[in-house]
Length: 156
Image (cartoon, rainbow, N blue to C red; front, top):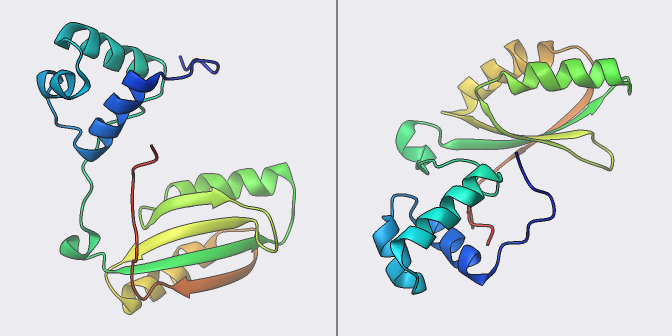
């Protein structure tokens, strides 16, 4: 039930900034920081949830501490460009738990995947036995991330 033409005002943006930093922040704390009483603050949050501005609440996990220290950006070009091939590819890649981000892109490649794995052996196993088995892949290019300079879920 997203409303396309709703534009958050400055109070809404302040709420969003606070929730992006700490989604567990209480309504009372948020309302104190934005100088609005708790009831209208709560109503604003509920409205933004209902309209799809706030999509979900989640925990940001340190990937290295859960044995997902290797990050690979994989670019993929399909060998056939039609709706059926692309749809099947999107469906199959969407089911792969190792793929944590998945984008349709322009340029020399059609898709970009962010893949997490514990190490090179596990990535190789994933690449050979899962990803490369998907029909329609024409070309791949894997980029191994040496160090994360900036990672953020904050968009406002």
